[in-house]
Structures are given as C-alpha cells and as structure tokens.
Length: 451
Ligand SMILES: [Zn+2]
Image 1 (cartoon, rainbow, N blue to C red):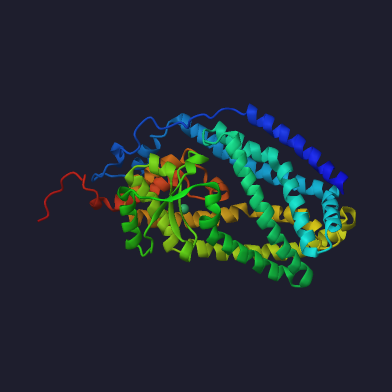
Image 2: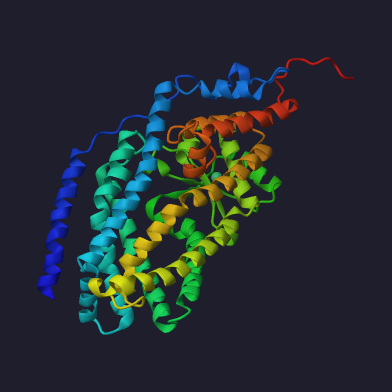
C-alpha cells in the first residue's frame, strides 16, 4: 500500500514543481484596450431626432470601439471556439489513458484494499480520480484560465491567488463530488434495471440544490459578497424591481475584480435565495444608465422564470444523458470491459468511461445548449429595455462586453457558439427600441406645439 501511495506522490510533487515554474514564467497582464471616446456620451446619430435611424445609430455606437480592440476581442472569442475542441479532445484523451493503462482499475483495487465498505470504496476511488484528473488536466486549465486570460488583459489575479481558487474548487470537488458519487453508485448497485431513471432524478435534485444554494453558500468561498449601501445606485434598481413584481429589498455587490476585469451582474437562486448581484467592475465602470439597463436585463431573467425553466430543460437533458449512459456503458463494457478490468456499470472504475461518453454528448449538444441560453438572454434583453427604458445604457453595456465577446459574428457562428445575442444584435435591438419610443427622450428638437 505504501509503495503505491509513494508512486502516486512522486509524480504529483514533480508536477507541482513544473506548475510553479510555469507560473513564474507567465506573461504579465496587459491592460484592456479602452475606447478612446467617452461611451456614456450618446453619439450624434443615436440622438433622438425626427430622422432617427436604428441602423445608423447602431453604426455610430459600433464606431466607438477602436479597431484594435475589435481585433483583439475577436481573436480572444474565436480562440474560445478552438478551446472547446481542445478541451473535448484533451479530456477525452485523459479518460482513455485512465481506461487503457488500467489506472482506473488500479485506483479501484486500492480503494477496495483500504476499505470493505462499498460507499467508502466509492469515496476513496473518487478522491484518487478527482486528484489525478485535476493534475492531468492542469496544463490546459493553466493555459486557458490563467495564461490566456492575462494575455488578453482580462485577468487581475497573480499566480498565487489564482492557484488558491483552483485549490478551493478542487476541495469542493473532492468533498461534494465524492458524496454525489457515493449516492449515484449506491443507486446503480441497488436498482440494476432502473438506475438510469433514479440516477437522473438524483442528479436533477443535486442540480436544483446547487442552483439554490450556490449564491448563498458557494459564491462566498471565492468572493466577498456585500450589501450595497449607496442609495444613488440601489434606489433606481429597487424601484425598477418593485415596479416589476420582484420582492427584493437589497442589492448585493460582489468583488469580481479579484479575478477579472469583466463587467457582469446576475439574479441568482430562487425563492428564498433569490438575490440581485452587481459586480464591482460594472459598478466602477458603468454609467447609472448602463447599470440600470443591465439590472433590467437581469430582472427579466427573474420575472420570466428563466432559472426554473432552464432547470426543467436541464432535467430533460439529464434524463436523456442517463438513458444514453445506460445503453452506452453496457455496449462499451461488453466490448472492452475485460481489457480495462472494469466489471459493470456499478463498478466505480467505470467513471472515466462515463465521463468520456458524457463529454461526447455535451460536445455535440453545444449549439443546442447555447441556443436555449441565447434565446432566454434575448428575452431578458427585450424585458430589460422595457423595464429600464435605457437603450443608450444598454448600448454602453454591449460595448463594455465587447472586451471579451465578438461583436459581429456570422449567423451560423452565432447559432453555434454564442450563449448571448451578439453585441451588434444587442445594440441594434436597443436602437430599434429607442426609435420606437422617441417620445420618452426629452432632447427631441422642439416639435410643433400640439395644444
Ligand atoms: Zn442574462
């Protein structure tokens, strides 16, 4: 047992040294390319006038983004398309290594030697599996969420705090992933024919608990969430919330600048855990109009029940993936089970195979998942315009978001890769809205008196 543990510890510590070297050598942060004009100034073509034209107004806003900034965010966002592929291929390769080199079988054997209780065996298997996949997956994770984020000026963390967050995620995965694995394998063992039905129900319930508990219990592990006390900011937001039937009395702030320069906001949880959260980047960089436009969008998610609806959709996806696993695991184990030394679906060593199969399914489902999300985001955009009546604030937000999203993709590109409407589409919707509500804007040139 000890020599086995040792053979595990040595590569782990070598890996830690390698990671530390990579961290020291990583490139310094580059500042984001800011627009050189004040985006809170409404451009001439977007000013209310009898000749207001939504296309021209949209172009005027688009022209505020420096070409160099567009080139950079296009490169960042398009790089993300390739990362989808590399992530898929890389994690599939890890699963195949674990299966074909029988590392998975060995981890199970070790777990079985350490305990004779099935749930404990499953938990021990999970600890090894989660640690090993974390280590093997680390190079790509390091590039993707540290090196690359710094290269594009989006990250604010040095290596130490970033690694600290990675460590926290790993700990959460070890504990909660382990408990989930114990539960799921107990179901597979006890209900040999119907495990896929009950297993999908269990995963669905876990997903609901995570969504409900996440903002209150998980988010504070990584970031400080505080009540926002500035009435200049909270008062218009709460007024808009009450006007739209949202029972919120507080607005929260999260110190997202600890990790990133991105602006963002969200309405999270449901029922008692529902809360409106603004990130401090939005608070610092956004004009009051922009903040209200963004909050109107977030409130749309709440009023239109997007979280429960998405969970329902997710429930269907989970059920389909468990049916597919039920069929797929049996097929694959029938062919290669003996070679991988995996007995059947209730053997924890099957986990890399299940992860591989789920990875294939979700890779193929990427455009579907994105389209479901993007459709909700579009709905929230329209709700937000109606609720906040801040089309120019909305356009400003789209410009800020252009720091990490491509502004003007092709239609197919948008359908496959975008989980939000494109920036161009968002500004255009805002300008169409403005053009249809010109009477709300007091800067209208004087009209012939009607009275
Ligand atoms: Zn949204």
